[in-house]
Image (spheres, rainbow, N blue to C red):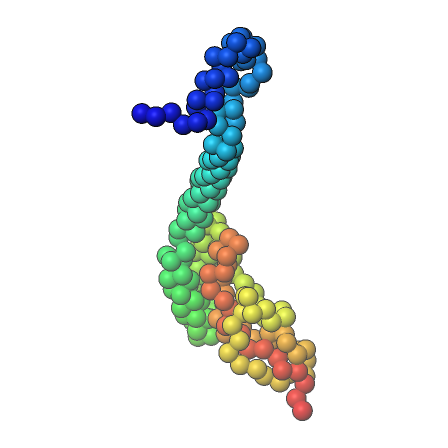
Length: 190
């Protein structure tokens, strides 16, 4: 195999009579990748930097993934009962309607009093879980909490305020479970 002219020139420099000894030669040349071949050393350094950056980014992405997974798990546990509570709220609505109708027939009935206590226990139970009713009547209309089904002129209620609540809304902790169905004032009649 033939040696290139550069390799032969290096040999001549090292084997010449006035060539420095090995100890002084190694002191003058650093032992890093740049001394191995000019452009190859800078390429190695660039690759090293690129891979170091890639490793740091991968580590950061993994840390973000772990945090996001923990947050999603926490939310899943926090709101796990939401579908059950949505169905229970509908039953509570019907229970309240039945109690209201029974009060109109005989307000002093002992059965009515017992059913009122059962309703109170249900409300306390769902309240302990984190379910809170949204009382909309007399409040300014908020599209995040209320679902307007009609506008109604009113001389006593200002425009944009809830006149009547047709169906109570509920929040589960800090999340809306069901919006209140409301009638909103359109201001004084014309």
